[in-house]
Length: 567
Image 1 (tube, rainbow, N blue to C red):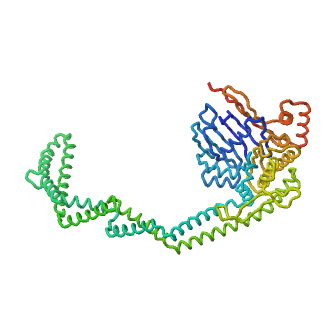
Image 2 (cartoon, rainbow, N blue to C red):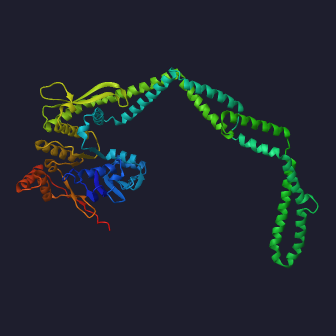
Image 3 (cartoon, rainbow, N blue to C red):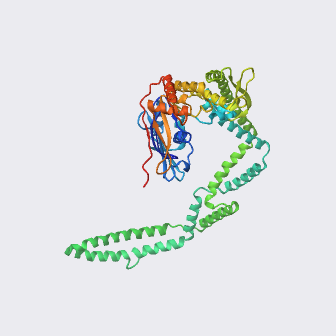
């Protein structure tokens, strides 16, 4: 359930702070005051597309927050994604900067727009201003029936199965057509892999070859230099180690006289030891160094072969092993693509999977269609269309991502037995009533706790408007219902009433929201009944409408006021 809505610098709303209660709530006000803007803000909070145009002119950002009462299934979902907050509450926030960038947060944790949309599916069901007009689209009719049938999870798997089947057929068709480009690529890769396999170049071999070549090519110089270093340190007359020992012996007796000589003496003796060790290592290196012209010739021949392959296939020498692995993978793919039998089996498997899913979804649709027809027909009778029969036609269609059905809503009117498409036989007002009946019927199958109707009652009035109000109030006894309306009959049935006004401010016109008590509701409903001139008669009529609705208003808290003008 929506508990509160906080808006800052959103379009013409400078600041709004609205608390919602359970039951049926309405938003009313003059045209252009910003009633639907509040629902637009909620739509952005729930993951709608945002742009810089929603930020109030002259401000750095729009900041939108909604607090919802959660439920156990959503709480578990949030815990799993490390997005949990206070128990039983989920706080959604959207910040849109003036440059068009936006940020999404759930319980204070940064997240993605996709996550907001997933959460919104568990919290809110929105029926917009143009829902009735969209009923003319076959895809919209099928989606409404699917929502009633509860097949959305199966539709994802069905669409995936269809796409896999299409990909399998394309692969089979290419193979059957003997795709020349694929054959040429296969032959070229087969030759390249054969050539490079013969080279047998290991992953690190190129670096090892170069290091060995450098060492063998300079073996004589390396041995000569190491031996000269060993002789200079300890093997020759007047060697460095002998001179260091002589100096150490002389200083050792002097250090007994002045202890300050002991520290440099220790350093000198350590240097003498290290020089002896270095001389021994140099001598061992010179003795063990392999001067092998034949081995050098072999390595240089191997390097030449690698260079030859590198030029031939236009590859860097060090990249040859990796390129060979990629060629093998692609060669395997092409071999499979030319296996007609395997491709035919894959087509059959994907077709079988699609047929199973499509048949199951079609069966669910047909099973739901009867109940959907009866429910909408009953609601239409309540909405002043007694005698009209709502129909759901399901025909077999070519396979597609949504299955094997086409869905068409129709109406059987007085004096006819043949259903005709609703878009062709319904007037604007009738289409609105049909759309509302379908929305109410669909809401019964949707477990979300909050339903929002944005002027879904457009195009009706009189006794039908009273029925709509009673219908909304009944829905409000089961879950939270929010409705933007121009109809006083609907507004009079609400448990909670908000008025939206457009008022001047130092920074320009701003939209403000206030919760109405009983006396102010009388004035607002009188305005909706009588227009500009509110008379004692319209006030009396408004009081009668409120009395007939049998309301027991809960306490209402809502505030919205212009922020202080910027200095």
